[in-house]
Length: 79
Image (cartoon, rainbow, N blue to C red; front, side, top):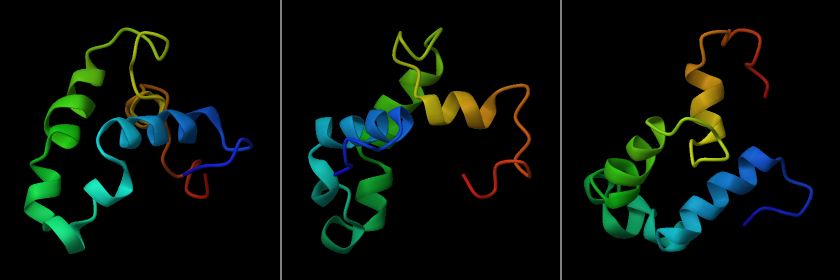
């Protein structure tokens, strides 16, 4: 899904998607938006990562960066 030159953050999220059936399993055109959002990736895997102490321990880096105390969304609009 992502090239070897992708950021670690993108690779981590790509691996999460692959563990949950790949992009086709998250395709709302096939499964419907409700089924995707109520599926295990969004209802279990992502929320479970919020309680992890570190990225090395399984916290999603995109979540850590976005919800971190020092995060300023205006500084990261083009990330």
